Length: 165
Image (cartoon, rainbow, N blue to C red; front, side, top):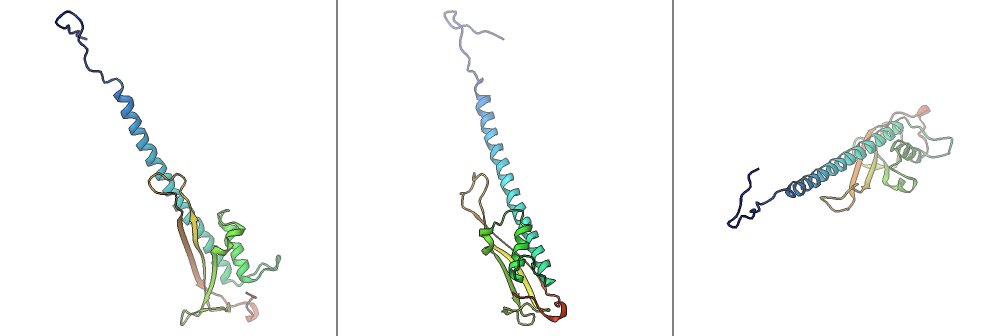
């Protein structure tokens, strides 16, 4: 290290950059932390949507076979909702059953009907499921609305008698 002396022999101070590295590292760390949480939030939303899609798909598979939960005395729609709730991995509680919808449609006209006989179309959906971000960094803490649905054609009921709705 070369020491520079001033006019009277006192050392001249050279500018120091010792604290700048810590400040720059903290800015980079905060940026990387924000990107990490954005990645986690995005993965969380994709996981929740995939889980709900799987749940309604299983509910639809249950619906087309005209099954009912005879142990608990539920009708077909309540049985389908229970199957969706069980496959949702705890995301849909008992108070959120109103977000699960089961609709039957006439195959020719696609008019919604209240009939579950064989050959009808059934659509099982979870609508307006609210998901809040884990860490609301770049956006507000407002919930994200997620809706998923699955549909198929009903099979003929055993003995030709559809189960009670």
